[in-house]
Length: 456
Ligand code: AMP
Image (cartoon, rainbow, N blue to C red; front, side, top):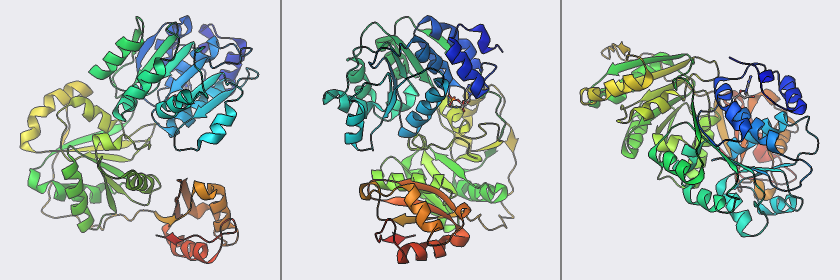
């Protein structure tokens, strides 16, 4: 590993790194920063947690001239959460560069304040392709002085259907620029977009995708007809607080979720055919820990922004080994131990060699004895979600709800979990033990001086 002090970074950036206590570069930083700082285009295979934000962030901040009040750097991200994370990290790195203006521009937030904040041009824009295109089309944003472009989690942006929007945004950038593309996988589509938007990019890949995370992986040979039984047994045995079950087809997600529900599990299914609102609700309930098992297709699970799941299960092995790597990458991140369990019917055995090659290690097989059945009752999720029929349009903010619950209603702050606000709805996670009381208090009292419908 090498230290940041070997790089030619401005004193302000060195100071920023010191304040963050970043000393050694992460592998992706060590491999990409020398090229990034030279202004070369790079295509890098890196996932969240690798330090990729600082890898491109230091590049952007090095090129930037704060005395020119024009958008000089643009970062496109798939989701608002990621855009917020990236903005936060860039702000931290830029702390000692005076007068840098950075704006985060994402959909799902009203346009007007964004338009107002664009009256004075920022130096850096981080956002989602759809919203940025909208602001460009309406003439509130110009990108003709952009020197550096980052496509962050490019594979996810393509999966989410942002391909055209990205192309339209890029069409408005100067041809003379640095383009950095980060992606967890290299598909043909990613290669194609790289060819279209990059010039002679340096390709940067660091070690195997599994890195040094600690993941316990076990494969079980189970006939297809007994898979749900095996799944219920293993869930009962390991009792993870949250588990993501991957299915290859939408139909399986429904069937498996239905079967698990019958067996008493707190389970939801997520597939691409849900309405946006139902999708949001499923994602919120799983993320706020009021549902312990989520059954999803690989594509649908991409919208899920949870970094370190305690356990993932494959109901069926994928035929593409890269998908297998993605699945196990969902657990055991950030130093926590992960569990990945794969159910494999005899017809799927043929997929094992490619999977072993992709993960760089032989499969470990476990033995299952389903005869005894699982004795322990399914784990209850620790939280319950309350739904308030009011949201951003009603100017309800998480702080207002926290205030209503801990103030007038007298609940201790630590029983309130995640609060997610949408345009017309708010989801509040409350510890199971206090859920009933919280609901009664919210129903009886007022939030911001108004009464709202509240239900579980
Ligand atoms: P990222 O992959 O960009 O989401 O970064 C993952 C986490 O690692 C973030 O919390 C960063 O603040 C942190 N990080 C990035 N680079 C370094 C470094 N060189 N040393 C220590 N932590 C870092």
